[in-house]
Length: 233
Length: 233
DNA sequence: CGCCAGTTTGACCAAGATCAACGCAAGTGG
DNA sequence: CCACTTGCGTTGATCTTGGTCAAACTGGCG
Image 1 (cartoon, helix red, strand yellow):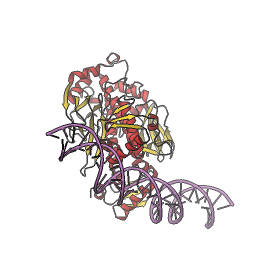
Image 2: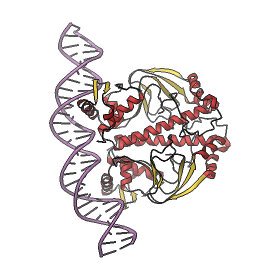
Image 3: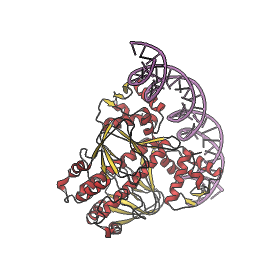
Image 4: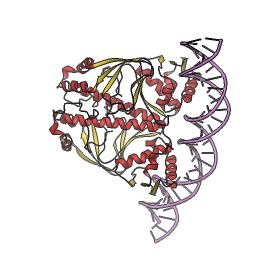
């Protein structure tokens, strides 16, 4: 659920204006992140392996070290919904409930750090900045959710795919060639579409030269501007 | 954005397991909420009046005292998306950004409390429980967003309307007769549908006796169970 | 080489959008 | 007090987008 813990320039989560007393722990601006290193346990998962399952006790959270994971939920009738993809540096699994409401799986082989909730609590007592940091991540997630709801509620298939490609390229710092580790099915479940529609839209983008598709998991962004203005024309 | 500040039984926002030190301020379990009363300013708005606009400086947050508000965003091409409705007791407007990304309007005549960000910061320094409380609300919001994304991405029109009616009835403690202050258009923009579809689905529910519609803004829930199982049959 | 999983493409279908009336109650002004 | 307007809501006819079903393609891999 949480993104980019430890990434560049986190603000204080209250609009960057300092919700807490900035004097309390000015020195420890990055300490909480370093401190976490001490309590995290490195774990590896292979493709499609479950990191945690819907219904599991929710007693820890994770940070992706390497690879890509998806947070998803399967409905009784087979419909699947993917809440988010997390890449290197992204955090996930910090829930409000005691039980997992979603499951998390490895999209490809991944390495993650697992932080137990109990240890995190202890750290928070020692360093108030960590709480701020976690809060900030939650607000980021909320902002992401807002954007995504707009996408799901009001955007066309082409707009959804275009904004997905742009979003992933920004998060992965891929200016021109984009690596898409997840399957078309994953993308479809993330965008509220079907595999076929995702495939068709991508083929259409390829046809009019907006993107190139050297391999299904490698997208060449030939015209970012065009992708950004889909639906405005 | 935030719900039910000061409502019954808030947990500590870290899965109810005590992220912080429960011993620090056990005494002040409800103090932060009471303390807020001191810094809040009461304000009234009439129907369709703007509480804040997309682009305004984001220097405060609100709690609904009486009435209903909607948090929405208007796209350049006229498409509108409603992020949430807030009823008495719900909080909204606590953003991560310095500028509003959404606007908030009164659905009907409302009274809200406005809390300045700066004053909230001060309070947080005096009472750590308030931070916990705000964090908890954010996590609630995130959970709500997750549910809503599932609805927007994978549910049929009938399922969306049914789950909307049940959701509102729970939040407003309306067992049998439900007051819907917002217009069909608002509901449509919240559910990612059109006015006509919302209207048609409601008429269909009425036809098969699931609900009654004495007036457009008054819904009688005749068969809650049926509403809950729409789409499972 | 042939299988297998994932992807693409095509033909057809249906849910919901769009376009267009119509209904209805609450103002509004003569 | 009653036409007339106005703003919603409902209903119907038709169209479009994206879903469904089915088949063909592609690149590993045993």
